Amino acid sequence: MKLLNDLFSTDYGLMSIIGIGFMLCMAAFFLRMFLVKMNEPPAPNPAIKSPKHPQQG
Image 1: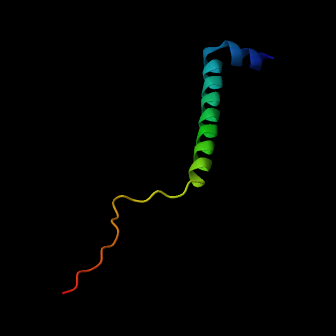
Image 2 (image 1 turned 45 degrees about the vertical axis):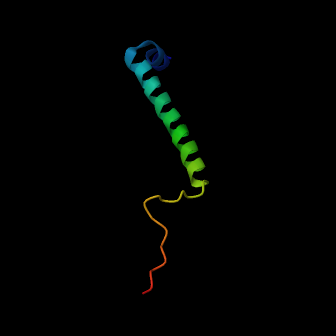
Image 3 (image 1 turned 135 degrees about the vertical axis):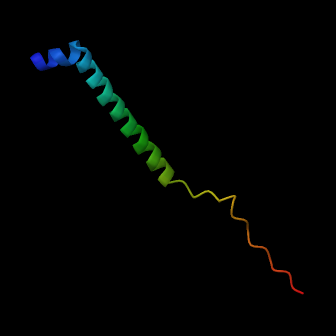
């Protein structure tokens, strides 16, 4: 009971809860972002130009 009291009533306990919550939200965000990005088709690279036919002559 003392642990829960310290966790929810002290400044370091509340910062711990906020830090843990923030990290869990980041993990969920990155997991969702990476799963969506993995299923997208690759975008064409604009720096690579299509090969031109060599001029003969």
